[in-house]
Image (cartoon, rainbow, N blue to C red; front, side, top):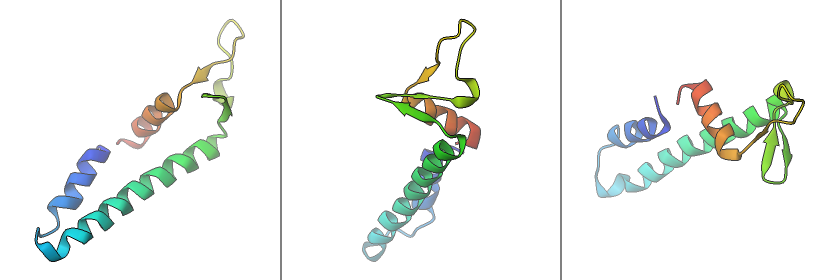
Length: 86
């Protein structure tokens, strides 16, 4: 299930009335916060190192030519989402 799907489920599970509009924001904030925390924990647990705007993965730190492999934040986010099935 993608993050977008999870957000849609949160919205669809709430009765849409004026008094619950704030609940939608609270539930969405909870889902997004948990996603952000999960991503940050994943980066930390794998021990990615940041160099400027790029990151290296210590598990695969060099390519076949011995050059460092650099990843953008977006590449790492996509990898995280794929690993988590989001």
